[in-house]
Amino acid sequence: MTEGRKRRFPQPMCPVRAGDPCSLCIPGTSGPQDCPLVQLVMDDPELRERANELRQAARKRQQGR
Ligand code: SF4
Image 1 (cartoon, rainbow, N blue to C red):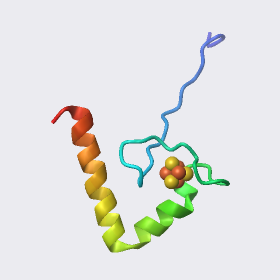
Image 2: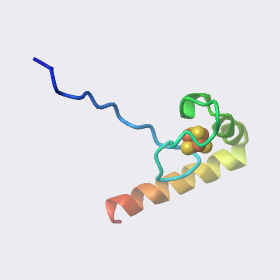
Image 3: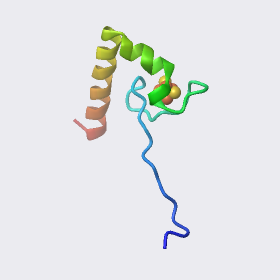
Image 4: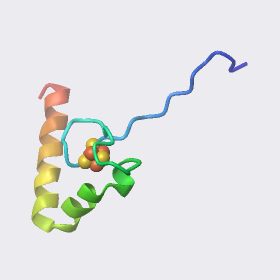
């Protein structure tokens, strides 16, 4: 029944490159879940807050607000 149909998985977004999907730009990572740059940013309260602001701004841009 599913022959010839490709299953698609959602592409995770990069938490530190607001609005961009994860492109596996850090060698050896398999996504945001084990990305050392994401871990560094999320471990720093100021960087985490700034990353959140940038993601919200990117989301609003995508929604045309
Ligand atoms: S590897 Fe890390 S920094 Fe690069 S796009 Fe993916 S989550 Fe973002």
